[in-house]
Image (cartoon, rainbow, N blue to C red; front, side):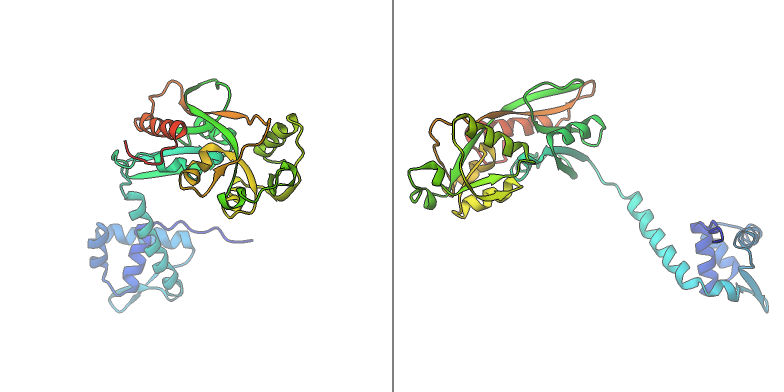
Length: 298
């Protein structure tokens, strides 16, 4: 059976290491703030805990016992790590803010977090909209940005705008697309994604059944393929606004298809003050959704 690990605190470690380095009992006592008598009693109690003498008398000097000496390299390393850990714990992190962003918005929404509001550290987490709601409820983040069509109990919600889907492709590819939409090089999505289900439902309701050249399980993959002129992808407008503005993507009209749009909202817990930074973040995102602005200022 493994022996219980003896309890050795930082003062014990400091005493043992200093004695191993040749310090006298009085020098050790001065460093740790103990009288010679108190120091002697502490060493006795430490010996009782470890189960063997930790010191021995050599002439008139108190030294570390031979048995304890074998562990000194490890004890020194442990002391160094403890000192570093304590300095980290004691470090003032300043003002820390936290934000949850639904993964469908990740990659562009982060640019609108305030950068001049006295915040020393941001903690940004992503997940599904359901994940973000849970993080806010549990207090893991101060506020969240989600895609939702309805209110949530116990939450204060601010509608930021509406985010429609659109078919997009590279300008270089658009000029080569055949007249028959079924023959376009479509980029499809895994049905495990709610986005993929929405796209297929919109196409099916209009009587279209395209053959997909690519099947992906991430919106970011579809975006990259579209920019590289590999195919036509249906993506949220918020995700492709920058590429459209930079003429790397253009909207492709698909006859008779009505793409759905989702409500984009910011939320925080009811009954607690609204995070001071949230209104500014929300206003920036609203301008982006309404006008495609990319600046994070103002």
